[in-house]
Length: 279
Image 1 (spheres, rainbow, N blue to C red):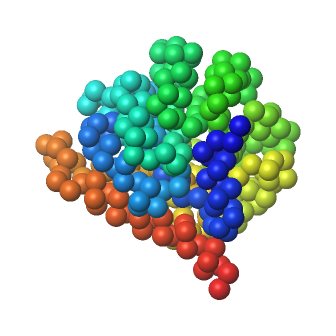
Image 2 (cartoon, rainbow, N blue to C red):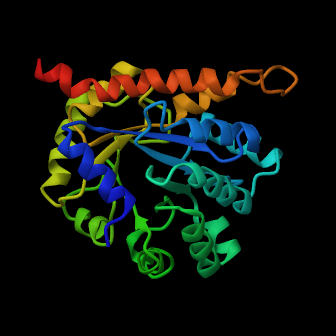
């Protein structure tokens, strides 16, 4: 079965450009603001959207995304609301892939079968669940694949050639390469190291390789896009959202437009990267 992710990466490959993959946290800082940003992301240049599932203990995430999760939970975010965001987005966009990213606990709490059924019905295309290793594939990965969802796995600088086959075994959609050791938003990736890592992963798979963690500027995004099939930006966008909250905790008027303007600058960096390299 060909998924939205498959179609999107195939189209981008035919156009000789990398994907711009954005991350925001569902419900940060509230449902309506998230929905406004989410629905505006494709027009701002997002090729694939990762939507964070709020969880009380986001151990792989840095301060920016941890804070976004806390804001979302304080505003009443839940798995039900997260899926409702996808459903409303999908009512106006049938093509842009949405990947839910986060941790297994909220999925387990809802129940795997119910979660997969509701996610598929809402229009979710794939899952990134950072705390389920390949040895636990029967827990969620295999049921997700049977339900028609892509299961995207993370590879890191410490994932060596012996470990990669296990990581890639049931991966689909794309491979997410974590460009630094550590938590999200904690450092900037070294372009030379990223290029070598992407080349190494591609010796083991035909899947697209998207690179994330530590990309904060259009220039950094462009550098990554010259060597990878996609550049993922999360913490920088989440920080842009946080900057729109005043000292009383209220969202400033016009916040979604300003966040999306920042996203558009990042997208321009990614989409212009290969054209610049070819000149």
